[in-house]
Image (cartoon, rainbow, N blue to C red; front, side):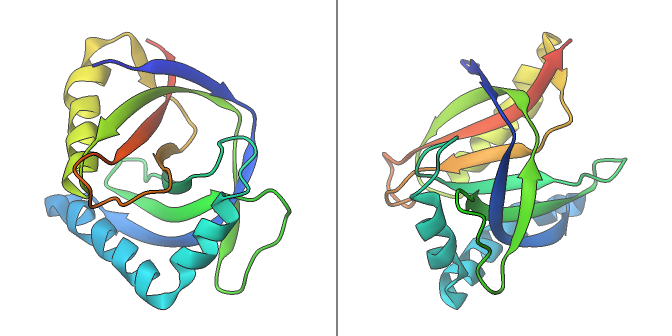
Length: 164
């Protein structure tokens, strides 16, 4: 898989989060539903407005996988944006993303199938190659402005890495 290595300083994000399990592929169903919930309840609009001011990552909305259980069967998924001014709108929470090195993978296609395909390749091809191990920082999905239902939509997945 093609990737580039990206190093970033720590930064804060603001968004909405939920806990999800990977058992029986529940995360593959529940995360797209969570995006739809955030679109319906207006929290996505608040998050997207924050993301337009991103300094470290630029104008993107994030999908963040963090707080993994020790067996990797549960994690917190957060729809968020970089917080550049320290404000936390009502109904949202703030988290800090530590400085880290990430392997960044580009993806193209309509959501949610295209993002799930990229994730599948990362876990089935990239990590088994042995060059890198998964690091301690959260996994990041970077969604730039555009229509995520479009077949030409471009996005990135960043996984934290340490030398294998």
